[in-house]
Length: 55
Image 1 (cartoon, one colour):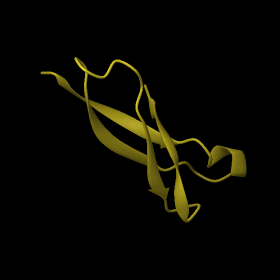
Image 2 (image 1 turned 90 degrees about the vertical axis):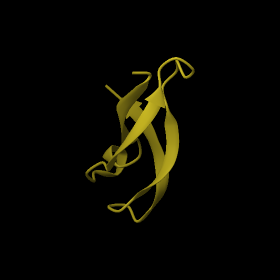
Image 3 (image 1 turned 45 degrees about the horizontal axis):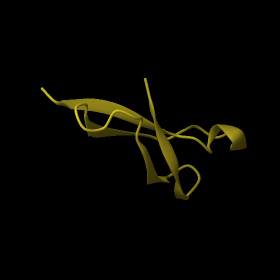
């Protein structure tokens, strides 16, 4: 299967001492070789933040 399930974690929450929000997303391993970065909503910080792919 070319699609891979990846976890995206907030990068700004730990700096502020709050729990990080996590989202699940799919990535096509054949066409996207680098890690994914998306702007998603963090309910703990009550704003949109950058979420990066984690292992």
